[in-house]
Length: 354
Ligand SMILES: *[C@@H]1O[C@H](CO)[C@@H](O)[C@H](O)[C@H]1NC(C)=O
Ligand SMILES: *[C@@H]1O[C@H](CO)[C@@H](O)[C@H](O)[C@H]1NC(C)=O
Ligand SMILES: *[C@@H]1O[C@H](CO)[C@@H](O)[C@H](O)[C@H]1NC(C)=O
Ligand SMILES: *[C@@H]1O[C@H](CO)[C@@H](O)[C@H](O)[C@H]1NC(C)=O
Ligand SMILES: *[C@@H]1O[C@H](CO)[C@@H](O)[C@H](O)[C@H]1NC(C)=O
Ligand SMILES: *[C@@H]1O[C@H](CO)[C@@H](O)[C@H](O)[C@H]1NC(C)=O
Image (tube, rainbow, N blue to C red; front, side, top):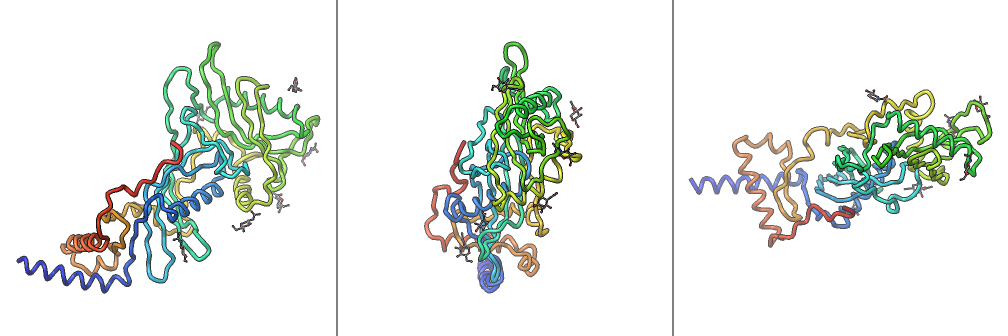
């Protein structure tokens, strides 16, 4: 019996190594390795360029990384990443590395994303991603700032009056129109609720004095900004962005933004949520890599080691009851080849912020 099992295992080892030339190999680099970092930063750049509403996101932690290599194909990097919301609007040209991270007390938004990237000769390119966005903590504490729905009447009133104030009184002598509401909230202070709001603005064809119909300028040439208003109309502070015409990323953002913001399409009701969500699933080439649980492929090897992944082709050749035997052989072999087992956890990587 034992001999029989041994022979089966040996047989499978031979078959396995012969098939290995065709099978994908999986490696698990440490989450804080330069390689993982480079892939994660490429994902961050893509996410921010692709994202058309709200704020830029910054990488907080690399939870998992798996590199799948197939003969004659670019390696694919499968990453699980945590992002935090910054206070820079997506139209703000400030590099994300210089953007302040929104603090937890201000009900920051967090995103957990799965990315698949290909390492091509031109560098990393995003194949697909999937994100889940949620607010970190909305403590029910009395006196804490709370976000309100983006169609909240009192919040909208503050935006209207503070924008009017800014329009009459800015050094650019330009009237701006509301482009997008970033967030609105209220805080209970002595004397009642105090509202605050953050919103993006776009320059129109009117000067501050014009009492005319004011039409937002074409996105590619318009001035944009982000206003913070708190309490009352005159408590408004708007940061006007430097022109971003030359930047690669924003050209794409601007085209997309046009679809659902100001003008006839502008509809605050589409935002009855309290914050902007990231694209939930992005898979332009219909790779299907993230639509199901495919990212969850479990790889047993605890350290960076080339462990053959069960490729669908192989599974079909092997009788179902023998599949566990293959897996056992494979992970034993991987452990043997990888030398002493490293006990230091290599994933998740360290948190960059909090
Ligand atoms: C990506 O692939 C190229 C070869 O095409 C290789 O030189 C480079 O090291 C790879 N990048 C990473 C981060 O592994
Ligand atoms: C412009 O701002 C100044 C102070 O910042 C304020 O005193 C003045 O009332 C404002 N003008 C208008 C028209 O809102
Ligand atoms: C802005 O453009 C609109 C539409 O072209 C026009 O009706 C309006 O008079 C313009 N406003 C000013 C101040 O030129
Ligand atoms: C905006 O301006 C760009 C460049 O001048 C032009 O290509 C584009 O067609 C304009 N878009 C609209 C909606 O007018
Ligand atoms: C656009 O992107 C390319 C490649 O990433 C880069 O070489 C170029 O400098 C960028 N152009 C601008 C204006 O940022
Ligand atoms: C906000 O939107 C929700 C859902 O569309 C709606 O039920 C609610 O009445 C709206 N509130 C206001 C103040 O318009």
